[in-house]
Length: 118
Image (cartoon, rainbow, N blue to C red):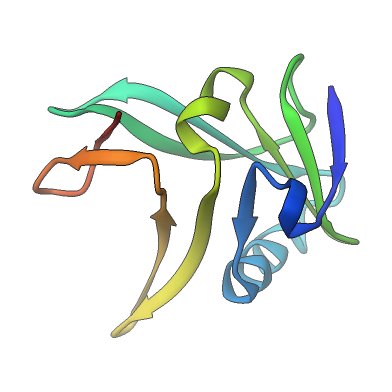
């Protein structure tokens, strides 16, 4: 398991302030848990993002200490797909959604459920 300090120049991924606050609030009643980001084969264009709560990182995960109360693990097999991705939390009307600003994406499906990289 690789542990990195949260500095933009060395990050596999980054989180906006809004995303950090959102995830910290979700983990407030789950001490010791972290957010795990991975991908799975899905949809018409290739891959889908998967965000889960986890008790620990898995072997090979890149572990990012975002704040005192937020740790994010990125699955080893997703690092090339997610490199330099910014994760944001955006309010749209009464709903809040997670947005992935992934510079590696070359194609997305119309419904936004899957993506492909070049």
